[in-house]
Length: 115
Image (tube, rainbow, N blue to C red; front, side, top):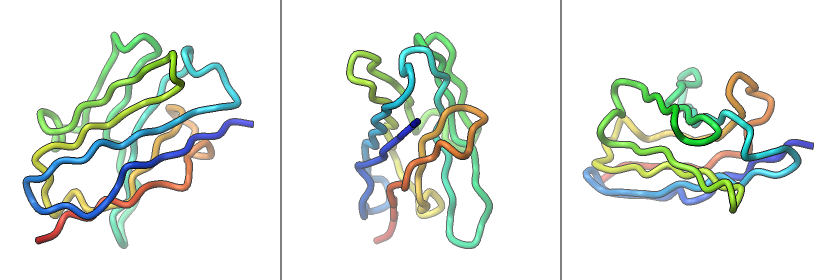
């Protein structure tokens, strides 16, 4: 069974930073294309970024490019999302998933940006 578990969210002031983690199990992590998505209150899910199996392919939503950094450590079955220069509009529940497979999302981790 594919399982992805997110962690690292929290409450941060505008301009602050957070690092999210996503630990995978039940599949060959090192072969998987993985993504981060988010859902703000009352809004649809929004794709943020994707990383290929060996990290040579990376793509970002325009509004987060230059502020967010996706990475992975296949030896630890873990993917990361470094969130820098956070804005109130970044407030959302953040999820990791296998690319194109929304059913693999974990329980999410809440990021709240507020002063």
